[in-house]
Length: 179
Image 1 (cartoon, rainbow, N blue to C red):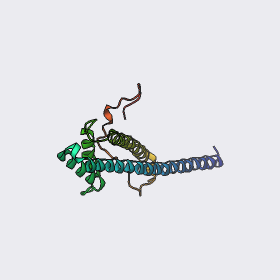
Image 2: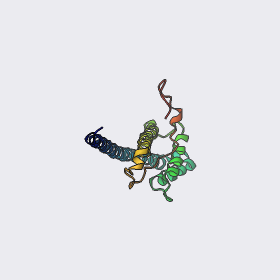
Image 3: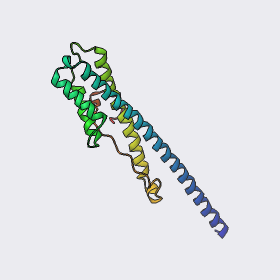
Image 4: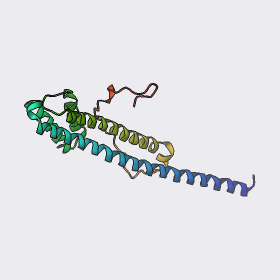
């Protein structure tokens, strides 16, 4: 091969590396935006569930029973503003209280209990979407070339949000993997 051919080959390899790097950076930016959008939805769902639980505990404490109403109200308050900064623990406590509620309670509108159950299920789905986005970000950033080239190395990796969502009992479509 002539020196010009080697130079052309090297220029082609550099162009490919630059194109791949630009493509990967675009993917990383899109994943970062996806994680941010998914967190905003998840946070909204968590707040909605806490607000419904607090309303239920405040407005229907007699029907729920004083002990259950106090536990539900405390869990909802803790989920809205977790004291030690561990939101997952507070959300787990609220989720357990919500799922422990009976399907029907005399004196409580069935629509309110249905709204709370729906908010709990939507929170679980939002958590799955968020964790999927976090997983995709981790997989891309932990690849060999992004690590070597230190792509997005100055940005923290997003954290998974692991809470009990009660969706393990929800049947998935036949043949679909459990996530």
